Structure formats: C-alpha cells, structure tokens
Length: 385
Image (cartoon, rainbow, N blue to C red; front, side, top):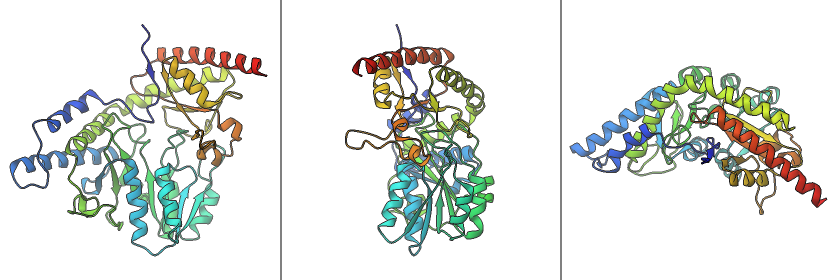
C-alpha cells in the first residue's frame, strides 16, 4: 500500500524519536519549576542549562548568548522591537524577502515614527550589494537579513553584508531558522564579521513546536517583550517550558550529528527533482544562487500553485504553495514579487522541502505523480478553453 510522502520540511519537521525520549520525563515525573530552590527546581534548572549548552554548540555560540523563546517568531520580534525600544526612531533596514515575523514588527515600527527601508534583491533573491551599500551610508540603527529564505532556500552572504554594516554602527540580525541543521553556522565567526544576533527554532530540525532562541551578542541592548520575573537574563520572563527546551537541545545535538549526511544526501535528491522538473518545463526560482540543500521552489507555466498543491495532496504528497494567496488575498508571494517574478508565474509557485527520511524512490514517485497531474490539469484547461 502506498504511504503518504511528506515534502514540507521547511514548514515543520517530524519529532525525532531521540528528542521525544529526552522530553518524556519532563512531561511526566520530572515537573519542577526551574526558579524553585528545592531539588525539583534545581533538577529543572540543570536540564535547561544542559539544553542551552547544546543549542550554543550547534551554532558556535557561548551558552550565555542563548535566550530561549517560544519560537522563531518571538525571537525575531524580540530583536526588532527590543532594539528599537532602546533607541530614538531612526532608519531600520530589512531585506525585501524577510519572513512576515520580521516584516510585520518592522511595519509596526514604521507606525511609531521609524523609517523602514526594504533592501532590494536581484532576480535570484540575493540582496543587492550596491543598493545595500547606499542604505548603509545612511547609517541605519539596525539591519535584519535572513540567512536562508524559507520559500526559495536562497542563502544570503550575511557575513559579507554585516561586515559592510559594521562601520556604520548598525546592529545586524539574521533569521537563521531555515539555516540551522542544513548548513554550518558559527556565531563566533559571524559575530567577528558583524552579525550581532541570530534567530533559531526547534521544530525545523526535528524538535518540538513552541521552542526557539535568540542568539545575541551581550553588547546589544534589548527591551524585553515580556516583563516579569526576570527569566532569560531579564529578556524573556515566564516560567520556562522545560520539556520543549530539553527537546530543543536534543534536536540541536541530533542536527549537528547529521549535518554531514544532510550536506551529502539532500543536494543529490534536490538535483534529481530539478532534472525531472526541467523535463516538464518548470521554472525553478533562485536556481542560480546558493541555496539550502533541501529546497526547491518551482512554477509550471499555466498551472495554478494552489490547484497543483491540492491535487498532489490527494495523491499522497505533502508540498506547499509558494504563493501567499487565498480568496481574500490573491497577491503572490512577496518574496517572488521582490525578485520581479511575473505575477502569473508567481501564482503557480510550489515548494518542495526535503528531510533526512526522504529517499530517491520518494523523488521518483513524486515526479511521476507530478507529471501525471500536470498533464491532467493541462487537458482540463484545454477543454475549458
């Protein structure tokens, strides 16, 4: 019997069994509040400290630079709003392809008197260096450029960009949620270049949903989003979700251990998909730029992305529409708009994002089903005309 195939790992990943095993005691018999002074509390504190070390090791940071949050969205908001709250309104620069959890808080700042500049990208989705230099010359207070795009998988050279921003005195942040576990991250090296903060998340690497972290240079002054008991160096108050944090740490340890496999296997699987896509006339976005090894965003001219995703889902393949559209919002993805992709092509975007459990057989089965589905949709379109 055919088993459904999951090809949407950029959205979330299955919980790793090793991670679940690490979490289970903290969902049952081990239940202390890490702020309590008795042994139950000390046990929880030790578990959080151990997880903090694991997260730090995965990104080449010091444990004291890890601030746990409820996920990537909160970590991104903590940086954007936290930095802004400690300064007078000025210029903020974010790339035009950022995730909404950077875009939206920046838009909130714009309503509070900040000038927000969206950094332009080229046709491959890479930040335009010449335009970036012009923005830096205006001395922005902070810059946020994601390490790897969640839709296209395009990787930005954040070390080079942050080095350009450093002389201007701008705090530089990178959303590394998609990068963690798929490419090497070394905060010590990046920090020396000019990166002051990274955002990471557990559920993209086989960890639980609801856990993330802001890796932040201690020189950066942040106003907390959540005030209270002073947890997480006073930057994120609230009783810690010990089970999720322990799971995050375990997931980071697993991600470090399998990075070599990811770097070896997934590019070959991606290439297999892209060869099949070329045979049916698909356009792959960002194909000429460095990309994550697991991500393919493509469009087949004349085929709506939402329609194709629905048909593939019924056939047993879970993929994502690359277009942020619905009946209420027919606009294509802001990422593809920034890349100057024609709207009619952008509305056909479909994302395939691979995981370590995917196989060559999965790729071949997917391509066969895709070819059959596209042929059927084209026949229906011809009849309608």
